[in-house]
Amino acid sequence: MRLVPRMCPLRSILVAALAVSLLGLPEVATAANAPTNGSEPADSIAPSQVAGGRDTAIRFLDFDHTRVYGAPASVRGQVTTRVQGGRRALQGVHVRLYRKVNGTGSWRFIASRRTSETSRPQFKFAATSIANSAYKVVFGGNSTYRRSHKTTVVLAYRALNPRLEDRTGIFHGRVAPRYPHRVVYLDKRVCARCGWQRVRITRTGDHGFWRFVVNAPASGRWWWRAGTPASTRFVRSYSGIYTTELS
Image 1: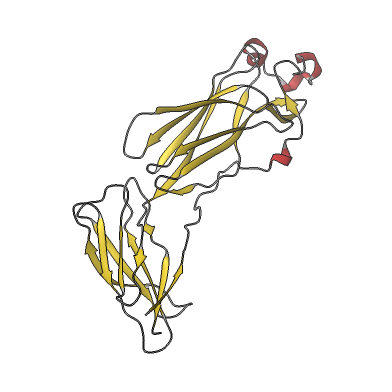
Image 2: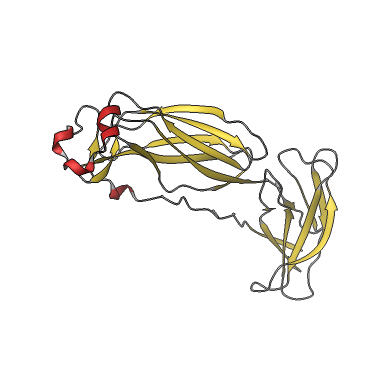
């Protein structure tokens, strides 16, 4: 049999509800150059804003919301405020990132950053993907701007680390993170446009290793992939796609 590997990366299945292009925020507001209260229409400033600083909001930008275990999960966005009838991003303000893993009840501090001091300021965090998690970005506020925070989600899928051995048809790998004595299934399709059919199920050993033996048709090729079911901490996960054919 001849191996023709075709990796099949998972695509993001969530899109940030407020993800926008940076081009949508052409102007910048800072504590130093923010307009005074008198520069805005009187009805655009609530009394609480005048007394306690201007309202702010966290605005997430587009980023990948599904990551393989162990890969960097990038969280990008801006801290915005309303100035002269529009929303503008703040330069050089501190934001903090917290994470809550699915199935747990507490938030853990990950990192702090300043928003960039550019014409289109933003923050960017890179946290290692360890499980399905909620991420919360917090701007603590200052003498000019009020505190704000917002939460987003980054899902994680397991790494199956697959290999298909030529000639023997041994299709094997090791699931990460730790996955002892758990289900791994084998899917097959008989043409490029055919649906996947589950043909076999096995369980990993003590250290998460899995193994199947696959074959090839008398003519043409077959497609194979391994997978694991979804759980609280991981979405349904798949290996790359491999094909077998007689040489």
